[in-house]
Length: 131
Image (cartoon, rainbow, N blue to C red; front, side):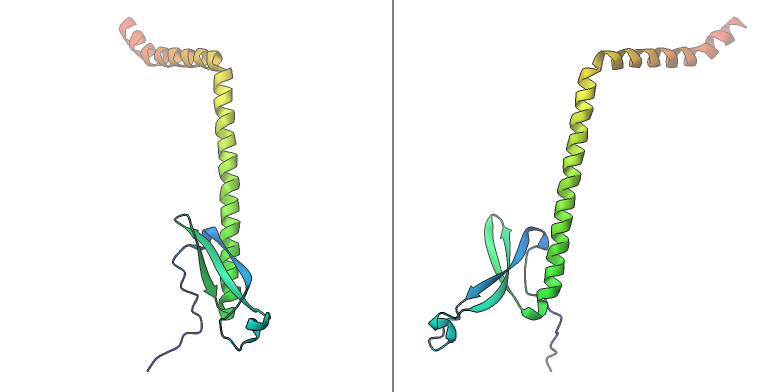
């Protein structure tokens, strides 16, 4: 006995992160159909680039809402990731700019810090020797 599952999504072998769903007008190819006279059918397709090639996959109307939510969520995540990367890159640029502009001052502070660290570490040794 075969069991039908109503909740199947179309077989798409790519992630949803790089594609979109589009409505297309199509012809079925039957000679006596209305689309042969110019009244085309409408169908939804998922388009995505895979290894540089554009792939087109039919989306059943029953799966359209669920797949649309997945694609919208992936687009939101993609846009958010792009924004975070831009902000991180800008932060790196600002840090590099600050380091270039304040190199001498930072070297001076580093030298003072290390000198103080050495003094603090050697002070107990000098006091023990003096006793």
